Image 1 (cartoon, rainbow over the protein chains, first blue to last red):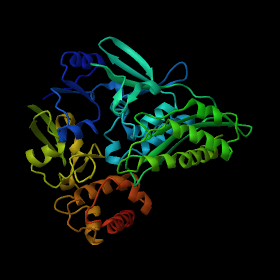
Image 2 (cartoon, rainbow over the protein chains, first blue to last red; image 1 turned 180 degrees about the vertical axis):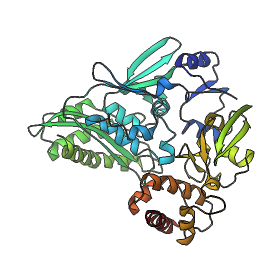
Image 3 (cartoon, one colour; image 1 turned 135 degrees about the vertical axis):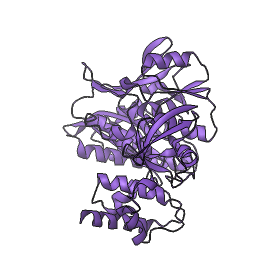
Image 4 (cartoon, each protein chain N blue to C red; image 1 turned 90 degrees about the vertical axis):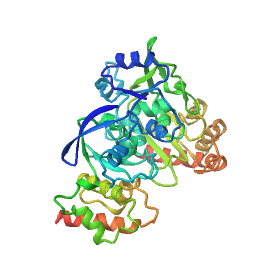
Length: 282
Length: 155
């Protein structure tokens, strides 16, 4: 196996295009673990560590925040520009595994891996993030809700890599909350709820909800959000929204909880997330 | 094979490694620094925790060839000239060490954590060390040890 260390995205793409068995290496938190377990045998790794452009964070002219793919989870968890509703990403990043893993793992790596039980995908869907990719046919962008296609399967095609994540500006006065239920600190979520909320005059004026570990991709149900919108978030309405989310969920049975148990958590965690977000909504 | 130079425990070291060799493997097999342990090799147990430019990382998840020019501190580099570091001494004095296998990683993680948060609560210590598993399950005294180190270092 060879290791390449390109310094620009163009060089990385040329190396990827020249070797169908090559894989881009972001932080390594997942890829190196898979190498160690002999689950993958790439002909070459193209390390993205030396590409400075992938580490930038910038505010765009339209107010969107653009996060480079090689930002570590630790840096994401400390990023002050992730404020208001966008703080859901900061909270999710802060709860990924452990400090020693957060210092290695990256935003782009987690996005490209597409694990529905990891923390960032649900948060990215909730903030209507846009995934930016580059490949042999040029650059393209796709909404996070469409990017995650199936379990460990994304919209990335041969020779493409994630370059950045763009967070469109949210309405004023939104609050974000990431509610994670896990067996122990640092474990994958048994179930998680990523929530963006704004209240106006006692009524919900903006809401986005996405569930993690609830199916093959993050689960978002526009009808559930429509139910909450304009309501005072009374118990009955929240139960209705949770019911719609549960119906759209298809969780797995595993050591972290049975599918039945996970479905039972949906209304409870949604209520907790709403309470927390409402408490910090301006 | 890839030739790199890294600073390990304050000393420039030259390494010649295959592309797939992890930092953990290079430390243990190329440099014979066997204090960092290989247990899960999956970034789950924390027994291989080292400091990379001052940050704790799982050495099993980092490729050696990717750390050229960077600064690494292992358990062997925490003390100075044969003297144990305050954290190492606190672990001994608090009776935190049972079989010892997880201890290098625990002590390295705790050292990095205390540098960032010199007077932590027990709950904060639990969170900071959640990535370091002890199969003897001796966590209570590990937390006692970090508190002890914090008191001594603050004094």
